[in-house]
Structures are given as structure tokens and as C-alpha cells.
Image (cartoon, rainbow, N blue to C red):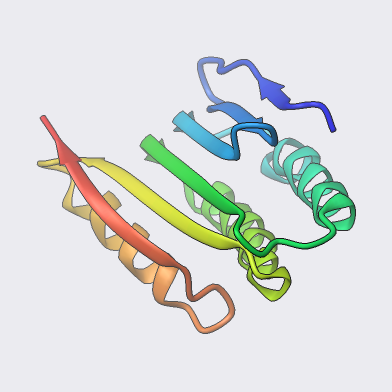
Length: 131
């Protein structure tokens, strides 16, 4: 399966999901004019990857997220993205999420903590501050 690459823009994050190295990365600013349209391509890719993944035993995926800003409509679709990723656990995949946030960005820290504690997501995560 080909990697998913979306170049970042002034209002959309950079996305790079590498199925070979099993690193899924989203970074930048997310307040696209149409969040649904932007995030649906990511959700579709994840659905396809899920179908192609036969046995996930021994497979580890690292999800690296680093938002400088995310608006509420993007956050809603990010939740859908994370639900899809959490589904990989049903195939035995070990998932580690790294939620990067600016050390003075308490709002982003809290948004990450709330997201990963939701019952329909429930992923292992760690929050990593940077300056």
C-alpha cells in the first residue's frame, strides 16, 4: 500500500502515513475551510489500510501528532481518525501515540488528554512538551 502524503498549507496540517515504517504523522495548523473533506481522505486511507492488514501480531504503529493549532471542526474529524487507528488494536496491533504540544500550550495538552481517554478511542499515549 502506498504512503499517504498531504503537504501542509497555511490552514491544513502536513500528513504522512508510512505503512512500511508504520509511522503515522500529522503536524501543523488545522483549520481548513472544509474539515470534513480534508479528513475524509485520511479516514478512507485508514479504512483501506485496515482491510489490507491481515495479522497485526507483532506490529507496532507509532502515531506522532504535533498541532500548533486545531479548530473544533478539525478536532471532531481527528476523533474519527483516532477511532479508526484504535480499531487496529482488534487485529493485534500495538499502537503508541505521541501527542506533542508547546510547553505553554495547556489547551492543546488538555485536548490530547481528553481525546485519548475517550472510551471509543482508548489508546496508549504520552504527551511530550517542547519549547
